[in-house]
Length: 190
Image 1: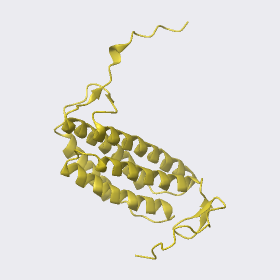
Image 2: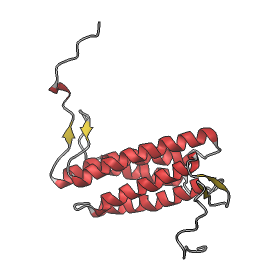
Image 3: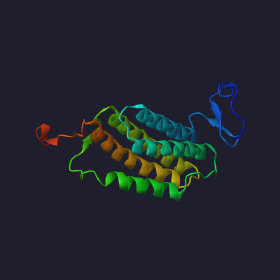
Image 4: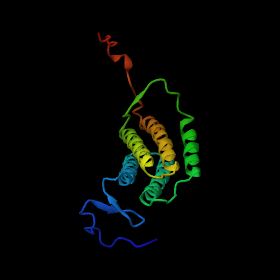
């Protein structure tokens, strides 16, 4: 491991720039900083899920591994040309997703975010994951970015959706279904 931070503030960012992992400096509002910052935010929201009561050991193990993956992914985005997320990481997510989803009943309705605190936090993590994915896509349009980060985030958002379903059921609250019949059908606009 390289140097550890002994002094937290450096004042080098006071001009609106920040250092990337390769030593280059970019604006704090650059797409690259936005991408790895959103991945960091996603990691924090997963931490909130893990801090709630009622998270099974199985889900805890999966999400803890995801947090490590996201830290690696943030490093890849912070250091241009670095590769940390591999196809095997994406395949692992797919395998876990298939295992966790198999016992759940098929979806016939849309699910609203809710179903207890842990499930609601899982849905929040899912939406932050989708934003992280959109940000990585925007970055890839401007700079040379491998496809693995985008694919990993796409799979992870699906996994977070399924984990939220599991957490809602495990909590006893159950899933909150969207009631599309609750309002009259809209009238055509003339």
